[in-house]
Length: 203
Length: 251
Image (cartoon, rainbow over all chains, first blue to last red):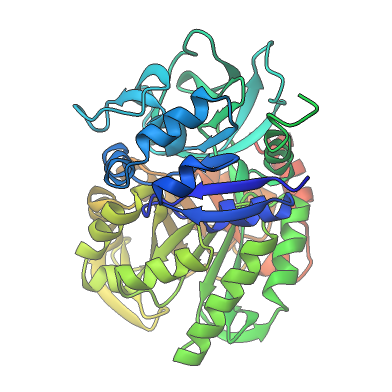
């Protein structure tokens, strides 16, 4: 069966790379910021580039926060990328006072331990022992904020920049990547292909 | 640990890769999509494409090339050349660029850096800085593809651009461009010590040894064009040599 993915149009994100990667993985894609389309989606992809505040504002303006929460509560597959992972959290040091989607019970902080921020480039990803989806490899990151610890109940992968930080989170049919799988070479493309099988008949 | 990136640069004019010496005497170096695919297979960490067309037709052609590159590339793509406004940058991002390089327009109107950072995030904004040595053991910013010297100190401009919102600085030594004499490590050291963002070394690379020198001088990434286009070496061989020299690379 061809996976059908609704890519959430946050207007701030550059989605061309994400759409191209999904097409290469054989998925059918729809780019939409419309609450009705998001609410009916089989699979969602929450991309993100830009600030936490700008991303949340756009989601709220289009009434997308509830549909995304419901989508996950119903056990439907969600792939979140970069700022997408961050928007799933409660809050971020980047935008004090701005409430996130709150599906991940954690708060983001800035990379304070290193001189060069944002982190831009390829970093090594180490899967957690209980992760079904993640493999060891190098991933492309472009971020200034991160989670320092895996929140309880989530599997995923860790990486290291100044200190350990969360590279990916996975629980049930949700995969959230701090890195850009769509820009992480064959390793990232293979991860997208595995993520597109989440919630399918074989799982 | 964050690895040192090796980035091939495609100077594209009217749909073809070209390369010269000190921005002049351009020779044809092939089809951009074909070259980019070869470099990705060899282990390129990113591709930089600089559109050096001078006409509106050339610009349209470049956007078409960006879209073609996006379909096949699974690594980041930075596109620069002729970007004058936030709208120009938006068009390149829509076509498939992940980051946008700005050069002359930012020198003429520095607020462009802040505007782009506000709209797309600073990780999207690459300041391309072309620097030429002065008789006073210093560097000045050159613009319009090296045709115009500005008298503005290069290190000061790098710091200002970073403060305004540049996420990376692509630092090209005008004196070394295309010569194969090695990167200007003094320039790299001076700039990378002064800014809190990654610096990409460019201009003069002929060997892995030159690349290792650039890393020791403070570069987070190294750019190469001529040596790759001419087939004198491959990215795979360069990375093997860099790893042997103790530089961490993605292999």
